Length: 112
Length: 313
Image (tube, rainbow over all chains, first blue to last red; front, top):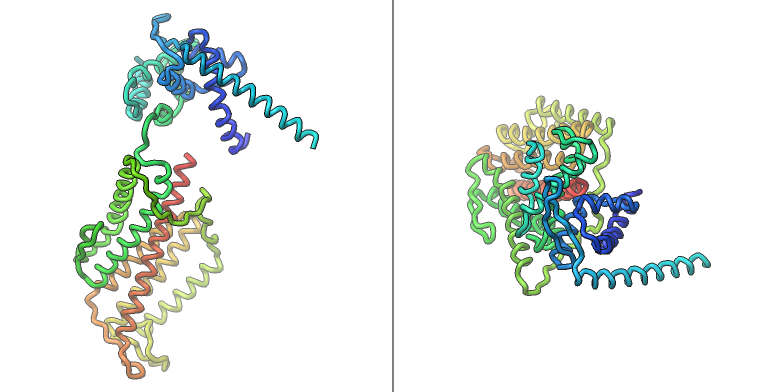
């Protein structure tokens, strides 16, 4: 991937990751667990991208966290809040609409 | 806790600028690194931890991702920081030159005080002035970033390209040979006639423009300027960068400082009935200003180059 493409891909992923995190946190998870879950679904995210995002989402009351000790190690579990679910639904609607617009635009340009 | 992990977390904490929750952030990172090490390498050892730490990233970059809230200086002003510093430094530098030429101290807002050039160490006023001006401009931009009133500064036209200026033409061997031949000729002339400034060219006994002491002194300075140019041209064969021009201009400035502060008495030969002295002083002022402007230009070029390098990192 060229440098320009990488930059644009990062910008695209920034918004997508926020929606994705809100979706997977319907179920309570901690950071490492989320990374492994996303990798299994074909999406790679760096830990020092995910954790600051989780902190921002928590600050905006879209998710909440709780410390728990598992296997002798403290882990911070996150889960979506009711406010987070509202935002998640709105974002998914926007994403679906954008997807439709993109498909339509690509279809129009295919016929040119 | 393992020493390398502890050091890594300490380094991240050093760079963290969050208002609260630093301990929680670090506990989370620690827990993640330990679990990832165990899952990836089967056991937690200093070596396996080091590999995970290396993957996690540079501590400063990790801490930067948590940056929240206000910037010290708004990004809008940041990109003009060097430009405004350059403009302010240009004025400051002209005042330093005046102090050097007229051998007097000055008080001028906002530069406060420019001392009289009593000694060679006066030359250190130049980098001090640059650092002072950078701090002053930064302070103004910090102030305007954190105040709510609206204002517009006149922005100087800045190239939008993030790339540094095109580098000088690469040095050529033929040019170096010509410079060395020229220098040899000039040196020979100086050795033979004890001057490089001639009022008349009646060889084999040409008339010098100045008295003997002044002739030797000013010719020596000119030879050094020429030699300086050649030395830095040779350096460019091995390495290049705007810092070379900065160093070269610094040496030029030191030589001009010697010119202005020498106690050598100049007696210019009367040519065609008029006194050459004011003309010579005017010429020297002009050349000093040219060297000064070249110095500032090379500093600005180096600033852009350094900013570009910092962006690449």
